[in-house]
Length: 422
Ligand code: AMP
Ligand code: GLY
Image 1 (tube, protein in one colour):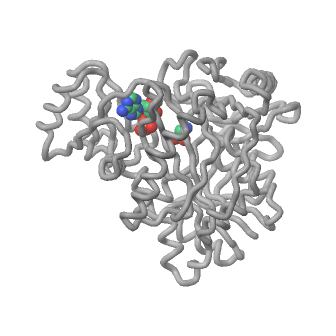
Image 2 (cartoon, protein in one colour; image 1 turned 180 degrees about the horizontal axis):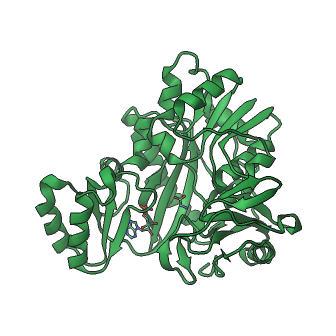
C-alpha cells in the first residue's frame, strides 16, 4: 500500500516509523514531515490544511490511505473532503469526520456530550458575550483555582488556571473579547479537579474499539512540574497507577459510553480517540477529548504496540476492527524531549544538531527538525524525542538520559526529572 501521513512532529515521525515496519507498505509519503521522516519516506512540500493540494497528490500518486496526525485538518474536515469527492472517496482517511472531531474542536460540544451520556467530568458553565453576568456569578459561587477554557482550538494555549477571583473575572472578560480570537468567543468555566493526569488512547472503526497503551506526559517546562505549559517534555508508558481496576473503570465509565454515545447520535468516528483523564482518588474523570494521538505520548505508546499498524488502519477503514487482537509489549518505554532554549517562549531555529549517529539503545523521533544540505538543524521548540525501552521506568529513562546528553545543539534543554512521580 502507498500511505500518506499528514503532520510534521514527533507523533508523525513515530507513526511513519511504525508504518515502515508493516509488510503491507509499498511507498510512504509525509506532508510536510521533518528531517526524521525524510529518512523513512518522501517528504512533500504540502501544508496539512492544503486539502486541494493533498487531494491532488493522493489522486495522482496511487495513495491507498491517508493517516492524519494533528487535530487541525480533522477539525477542518479533511475526512469529509475526501469522502465527498467521487475520485477520492475510495481512499480511506484515518481520522474522524469534522462532526466527530468536534469532541476536540469544541470544549462546549465535548462537555455537553459528556453530560448527555453520563461520562464523569468536571462541572461547568458555558459563557458567551450574551450571558457574561451568569458567568461571573458562576465564578463567584466557585472555590479557587478557577479553570477557564477557550471553546475552540487555541494551539494548546486556551486553558487558564487562575488562583484569584479578580484575575479570573478579568480573564473571562478578555477571553470573551477575543484574547484567543474566535476560539474564545465562547468560554467554558470548569470546576477544578485535583489528582494525577494520564492519557488513554483507543482506535475505533465506529462500531468497536481497541484500547492502546496508556501514557503519562509531563507538560510543564521545569523540574518538579513547575513553570509554563509546553506541548509535552517527556512521557512514560505504561503508567503504574493505571492498573486493571482503574482501567476497568475507564473502560466502563468513559470509553464505552463515549463509543455508544457517538453511535446514538449518529456521529461516525473512524480513528483515534485520546482521553485526557484525571485520576481523582482512584476514579477517572475526563479533562478533555482529542481526536488524534498525543505528542509525546505517541513516542512511548506506539513502540509498545506489537501489531502491524496497517492491519489496524485497514480494519478501521473496513469496519472490521472487532476481528483484530491487540498485542502490547510489557516493557516500559520512556521519552525525553530535547527542546530549544527559551521554549515555550521565544527561541531560535536553525541550530546544527550533532551526534545523532552516536546514539545507541534509544529511538530518536524528530519533532522540530529539518534537513539543511547534509546537516540536520533545529526547526521548532520541541526538537527531538529520545525514546528507550527498559524493563522498568528507571532503566528506560537512564538510556534516554544518556543519549539526551550525547546529542548536542546550541541551547539544548531537557527536563531532568521525567517520571519523577511514578
Ligand atoms: P486541556 O487543554 O483541556 O488538556 O487542558 C490543559 C491542562 O489544564 C490539562 O492538561 C490539565 O493539566 C489542566 N486542566 C484542564 N482542565 C482542568 C480541570 N477541570 N481541573 C484541573 N486541571 C485542569
Ligand atoms: N501531550 C498532549 C497532547 O498531545 O495534546
